[in-house]
Length: 457
Ligand code: ADP
Image 1 (cartoon, rainbow, N blue to C red):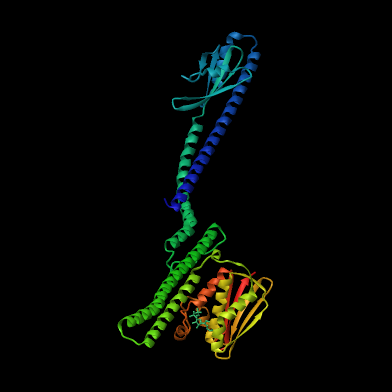
Image 2 (image 1 turned 45 degrees about the vertical axis):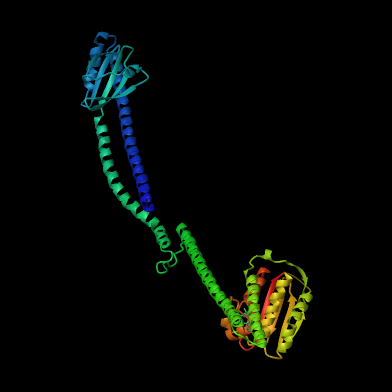
């Protein structure tokens, strides 16, 4: 059942039941007050009559034979349209102004101090009966017709019903409007939920200060989160697909080359010199695949547990890197300047060495003969910083964010010639990330670049 209908029914039921109870309470209270008033009046009147009779009996002195006649006379005198009397002698009727009025035993318990009252329904008429004693023998029951009070109650009940019907109608309309207005923001949220991917209907919900505003805010946040995650997922799927496409392409080229030269070696009669050349090509391509495999392995490392982090002598790491790159630097006539203020570094020695060598090797690739590459290593209070600064071709702003993506190369032909598959920087970024660090790149086209490794202490 819809929430608006539930609210509508609940409000309607509560309101109608309340009106019913209140109306019937008011009517009953009013009726009871009228009965009480009549009761008091009857008692007062009976009291006056009794006093008058008693006084007059005294006046007539001891003539007891006339006693009953005197009482009857008084009673006849006081009898009116709406009042009647019954005289009892030793609880037996001796005189009555109304016929067939039953006398309940309760009434007979009356004495000179207590007036007993009883209400009786006779022939669809309501009577109030008040009984008191005149002396030990005689009792007088005062009877008043109060049907009019009951008629009034019935009349009020009729009016009450009309009132309830009218107010119920008005209440139904009000509760309908209230239920609609309460559930309107909820319906809006529901609509947006159903069409969560529909951009047109999915503008932000208004964030008011009430509970629904909070709900709208939570919904807006959730929607943004879902959208961000969707985008992220899409990006991941796309980049994964791109990675696979690039990988198969990169693998295909050297494998085709190897296959080609192997077939040549098998099929044609070639000279010793040709054979050596073909074998050299095969070796080069195999080396390329092996390099790619090593880098891919380092890219696929994801957790710090894969590392062997310990305090290392950074001086030794630099020496090792210099030794590795010595031949390349000599061949290209590029100078590596080292400014090292770092004594110790907490790291996985092998991996950090690979990352730094790769960055220097990249710098060599983009530098000209005689250029300088500077390796700065220093620390501040919280970080160890290693910078590789070159005077090479630099990188355009557009490419800075892309070069860390796998298989991305700025100058494809040149990069390929140098044996790169565009995996070096991706690998470096991953190694640094595993050390809880970041790689920052500053560069200007034609003015060289700075690759800065920042590792938290
Ligand atoms: P590769 O392994 O093919 O060298 P990298 O991921 O290391 O690939 O580098 C990606 C691209 O970034 C390279 O094609 C190169 O053009 C560019 N690059 C890397 N280092 C530098 C640098 N120091 N200066 C200018 N461009 C660079």
